[in-house]
Every structure is written in structure tokens, then in C-alpha cells.
Length: 60
Image (tube, rainbow, N blue to C red; front, side, top):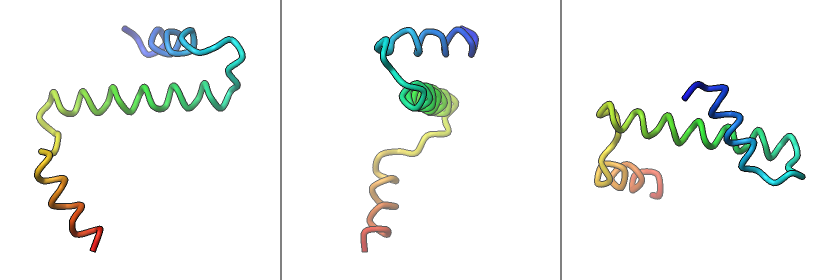
């Protein structure tokens, strides 16, 4: 699916009264999720235990 097709699909899934901010938010979130999935598939993800370890440092 091309980027343009993905954008059309996202926009078409929104309610008819969606405003520009809602459209932009939906496109942004969709792109971020797709990029995250791609990174995980490429082995670039971070294991859950590593995330927990990193967060413990921030919470202190």
C-alpha cells in the first residue's frame, strides 16, 4: 500500500465531521504505529524487561 493509499484509508475511516486536527492526529498515530511495527520486524525493538529497567531510572 502506498503512503497516499494509507492516508486515504485513514481519512475514510474517520467520521464525516472530523476536523483537520483530528485528521492530522489520525495520520500521525497511524504512521508512528506502522513505523514501530517495521522497526520490531527489523529487530530494532527493545525487550519489555529492558524498558522496565530504563523506566526505573526515570521514576527515581
